[in-house]
Image (cartoon, rainbow over all chains, first blue to last red; front, side, top):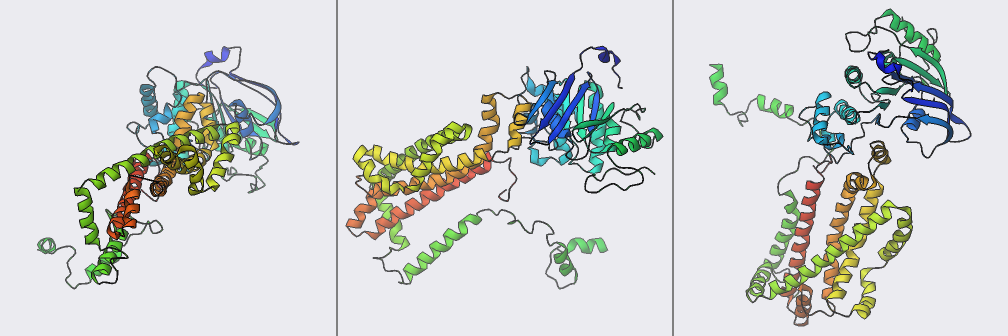
Length: 264
Length: 288
């Protein structure tokens, strides 16, 4: 668990989900999920496509008004969401996107600082289309962090980026997380991404929590964890097994995205 | 030695050598083959110039009878005379005022209705049907009724133009507004935008491309309606001037009027296109 032990002594978790059921038809997408996230805890939600991980995240973001279901959810007041697409308004400049709906004194100064934090100084007045995919996603990160979120929800935020950009974004997200320390719930289907970033990994399968795994690997020079660590490989095997991928069987290309490799 | 020779020789010299051929092959653009290519200054004027040249040649060679279509130079001298005695300016001013007022009212009406219909389902059920019905009725067909209601004065003319203008504004703005992707609505929800801020920051800029497209149709519609109303029971305006000329068989004045209508249409469309490019610089399209 990360660097702020004093935050963990709070009695109330930042997020509390109890027996959450969600479904679009007779077949449930979430079948009774119970989950707490402590203040400042980095939780990664892992699962194959259709396991309900996005449904859970959207429920926490309050974006599932049209989905039927039961259960209880408690989320903090300030929640930010990062989507898989950067979701920048194409008709607003980068800075206007960052400060969209921001109700503080001098939002623009705050927005400029946030853009500096994600390494986009001087791009305040660019249009979104002038930025690369990675840069657009950094703007989206700045937009979420400028609101001082108590909870950051991220739905496969790096899923559309190339592998090299993704690695750089992991480092950036880790850095920003260490500085601002919100509780994080990040959804992904990339096992390595989960192990690199998380304090705790939750594997979701058929709308239920199939595995919870605390990640207690050492941090490699403050930039996430080192995949060559032997502990890393062991956790990967464990998580892949929970996802239905074993060492012996090759990953099923229909269900399983490509980034995972079975450890040698 | 070699350097000196290289400098002295112009790079794209026509001297027969093997090098220029190789260069030409190398410089062939590799990308952008499917797009329309780079925008060239003044290229839009090519088509009109060709037409003008055909007119000049036709008149000079006698292929065009002056009673059918006056020669360009006759039209120019007639226009100069009309400007000289002030008839052109006064009629143009009246016409421009009619078209401008009708256009303005039509834009306001069309945009307001599009917002009402685009932002609420109740508004859509109330507004969209009647507008679609209006759209099916040609502006000309409404004229008898409008004349009965409003007489033959200015109000009838302005209202006719307004009715022609608001439909394209409504249709395109409404379509633009409804095509705003729902993911931006989700975003607005997650950053906690108020209803007013949502309209201002998401709805209005998102509907702007549609509105500007509608504006191009609307400007054309305004001139079209103007022509119609000015040739019926009118005592001023370019259309009246042409109608009068018809009575006396003055082809040249009719052509002056036509050229004027054409110029006005071309200029106003150019103005709207300029506005489009300025206001939509955030779009990366084939047009930029």
